[in-house]
Length: 218
Ligand code: Z5A
Image (cartoon, rainbow, N blue to C red; front, side, top):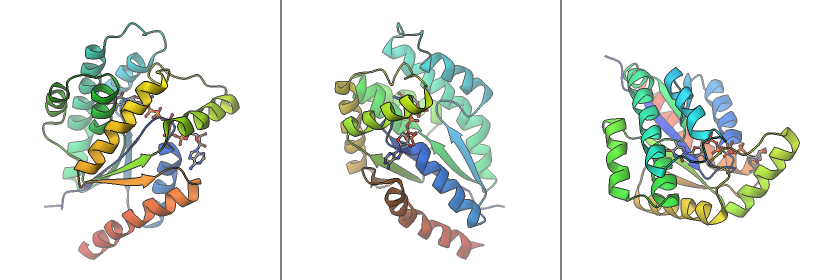
């Protein structure tokens, strides 16, 4: 029987630089000869991508916080059962752009939904599955907003429904991430305030021992 794979997630407020660091992680794993499955939340399955369209659609401003919570849970339930669990059972490595820490940060922290209720929705969706490692990119929301504004200006793309929330919401999201990071050993906090290469260097320090262990176990 194959050894179970590894489940890594990457988290942070919008604009923290997840996408930029995901590119570095994928190149690094390729160089190291590790096949990595890259997923995103919400999304990663045909059903999940359709739900993503509803969740982030700019025309859905009337969406209630409870609807939002349950749609994130529905997309996750599909992703866990259709992709993540089977891949881990086959010994594959997964990198997921956001997972349930985002729900705690955004729906409990940002929206102010009851944390126990949010936890229950997470448990229903995941069946108890947790990441082995979570890279949390910590960044001041003001800096993240400046970065996003620069990107929007250069690429001409518009903020989605959740990115349009105000700074009070974003600060509450970050506070919840910091609370989780202080509480949970699986979460490694990365200072995302430096230039992209220095942030990558910090992430690489965390990943290298895992890659070496994987090689040793082969
Ligand atoms: N959400 C939720 O509420 N609940 C949930 O359970 C889940 C999600 C799963 C999904 O969006 C939205 O759903 C998200 C949370 C919510 N909403 N918000 N807001 P997403 O994850 O698909 O998108 P995002 O989080 O908004 O990602 P993003 O805006 O693409 O940001 P990013 O990937 O973290 O950053 P980036 O694209 O790598 O970088 C942003 C810009 O900064 C870009 O121009 C870079 O070139 C630049 N950059 C990156 N790194 C640096 C450094 N180090 N220095 C300077 N500039 C940099």
